[in-house]
Amino acid sequence: DPESLAKLTNSKADTVKVAMDLFNKIGLIEIMDSGEIYLNQLGEMVGTETESARQKRLQRSKDDNVRTLSGKGRLELEKEIEIEKELDIEKKKEITPSQPKAATTRHKYGEYKNVLLSDQELEKLKSEFPSDWQKRIENVSEYCATSGRTYKNYLAVIRKWAKKDNSNQNQSSIPRKQNYQNNRPRSESYVAMQYEVFVREKQFDSGLTLTEYAKRKKLKTEEVEELKQYIAKQGELN
Image (cartoon, rainbow, N blue to C red):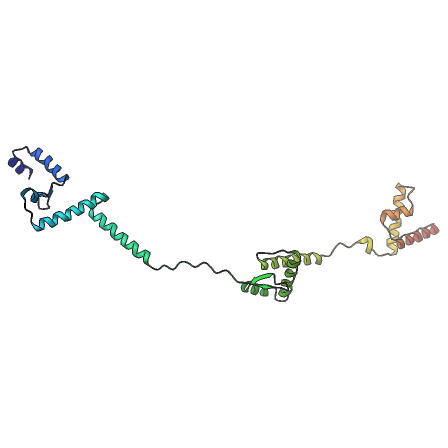
């Protein structure tokens, strides 16, 4: 212990402690777990060295070199070596790379072989338009051939055209407003109504002639003749 060494060397205990710490740091001595102090260069100083001491010195020298170069302790280095080995094993394992999805095969349809549909798209087309799916393909094929157009998704085009067809059919099914001017019945009451209107308008425009009135009301030739006859009849009654 430092006190015994202080007595042997005739030095102060504090001086011995400082010296021993310094010798331990520079590797001149090594304090064993049992408390014994081992002099690393004892053999060189006395001229003899046992075999076990030589082996221990060589091993310690190797460890010191490794620690000096890496700046890491022995246990830390061994742990890193094990980790590197595990990483090497993982790299050597055969890892099956993920295969890219195979491109969907599309077939050519239509008279001009320009409508591209996959098997799945064709089945959907048949189920959605069971009665005229072939005709719809031909319509698109003919249009593409004449216009030079191409599409990314021909099933979507056929569906779009179908919606447009349905919209047009719905509009045509709406009853249009009947043109009364062209389809009105030429009855005596209708002629009488035209007569009353003609008379009323003449009250505001005394110079209004029957010809001008007929143009204004867009009357047909036969309607004008009927109105003339009715006016003449009214004159006879009056």
